[in-house]
Image (tube, rainbow, N blue to C red):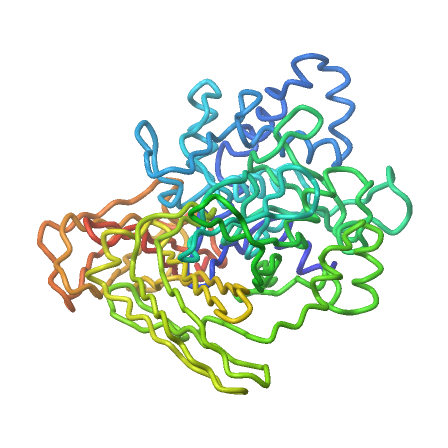
Length: 534
């Protein structure tokens, strides 16, 4: 790593955010606010290994492999007095929505000052951000990673089985799932416990998913082991390998109870991303996890991992092809079209049925209500012909059904009357929230009061009520959350605007993070980089 990389990945002075395409996923990583190091050391002191044998635990703390594994277990509270309680439903009574967190400082202080009671609630990006803060505070270089179309393989067979009904909509029959995205962290360390060549970035996942050695934790496992298919290396290589490489088998469950395997081009492990060093741009690191599809190196890695199914799948070449295409950007509050594009690659005319539907979905794949549906019983395709079928997505239809993740799952099922084959295309789309504009008023100086004007334009065709901005920034707001509420209603197209005041305590590059909530538009994120002078 370069000196600049070490500085950012260890000190965290340039803070991190995660992206789910257009969704800015916070909280920020914050490792050096007052009291945070003490909270991180207390996490080590409260881990069950320390409570059972303090001497052995103290000796283990010189080893980043040991410390990372302890943190993977202690950031969640499933087996111990860990930091965060996970919640993957819309019921956040007794706590707050994971999307509401703006910084890991508040979470760690909450845990530390409340007798190590778990903070409610977290989901994957919150678990990962807290783990990154703690790792850095303890001296382990760390970065956050987002994996899109992330497989959750519960039985280590490297296969995800999915079942759809005769409308192409998923029905829950297996614990195996594909999450729209999943976040974990990578820690940089040597691995003297493994054969040479496995030093460097190691996956560590604190989100409680499956048990490892009887405890909800995952890793550390070298990226190289995942890429090379070395699934016997410590720790939890099969689970992480499946997250980025699992084979997806899709079956249609008929009304009579029978099932039929259908042709589907669903892939996992897409756009594996982290934040670039020195900027807020997304850096694609997929190549660190796997070789290019179809390459000799990929074939060798899959052979090592005993993953023959995917090699066979790559040889499939269906006569009919169906894909879903969407606009570059779909904004929340607008009506828009999505398209099922069907191509007949055979020399014969085809008569088909097309079922094209949409449902709200959470980031971890839990389906919600219908947002739009079309059933065409007589689609005719000449040899070589391509057809585009539009499905209109109306705000009046999807508005009340969206989850707080702003995700809609599109599914297009094509049934060939002649061959009885079924073809499925699935795609998740993210509805983009409006931009929050932050304007700094005055010259930013250390220990001098500063103002920021914050503006958001209402993009919805309905008024916004109970509007509230919350603001936080490491070394900007004194570790506190600044809240400003609007007393008036914000009509469609109008601006919600507030002015907030804060006093920076340290010079350098800082990040002011903003969250907007209202009755109809929630968890809108924004930020502004601010250079504070001495």
